[in-house]
Amino acid sequence: MNSVTEKLLSIVSDWKGTFDGAFNIRQDGECAGRQSTSHIHIETKTDAPGLIIHVLPGTKNETVYIPACVTRGNVDDLVYNDFYIGEGADVVIVAGCGVHTDTEEEARHNGIHRFFVEKGANVIYREKHIGTGKGSGAKRIDPVTDIILSEDATLEMDTIQLSGVDSTYRKTTATLAARSRLVIHERLMTAGNETAKTDFEVILNGEDAGVDLVSRSVAKGHSRQEYSSRIIGNYRCTGHSECDAILGENGVVTAAPELSANHIDAALIHEAAIGKIAGEQIMKLRTLGLTEQEAEEKIIAGFLK
Image (cartoon, rainbow, N blue to C red; front, side, top):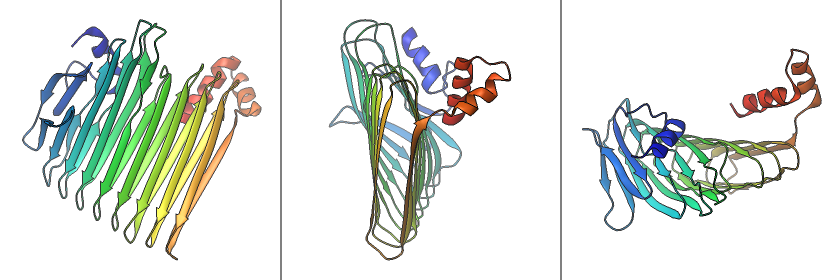
């Protein structure tokens, strides 16, 4: 691995010189390191760039790391990763992506992840994105996630986009069987002329399935964000979509939640709130000795926590 990869790994996946457990490190479209365990097997796809990750049934208390780094311009990294989570397994997946360029050439990563989570399995998925480098080339990250949850399965996703990503389109689709649950917490920060688009579609296709979608974002400078979500309830189920955004300077945010209740007992809710930081919040912190900029940074950090 080169030094840029090591720096990006420390940011997006808490790299401290090694990973404990199964891992695959991707650098500029190539494998820079891999390790499987007795319960988690990582294999190279034969029909497309990417991985097949098998988590065996009954696996407990294990973590698999799959970070990807683009360390220079003129790299357009496309990867297809399939996760097969066995029945009754309980696993943590730490992903994350960093893109870096010091030139006028674009650096891009497009990760297409598919999750097949079997009956009674529980997955916690953590992902951070960041763009770095002094080059004028665009830094792009465009993740696509497709989720299939079997009966009684659970997937909790915590996704964070840090600074420096010029453009991102984040598309997530999911189909939930009976009593399964999907929780997604998204946090986004954009500044300058950056753009970010989030697109969720969740189909609740079994009795007592449930989804909770929460997006918190901050749009500063001249950046623009779009949030859209669609929850479709076909059985007795629960669904919640929430978009909270803070505007700074000339930032723009649009939110378009949509609900489709196709069963009399489908309980679906959506919420959206967009606005600037309240002046009284800044004033209160300034009385404690903070500058206006420091007060704003404190408020934003607490909002995105």
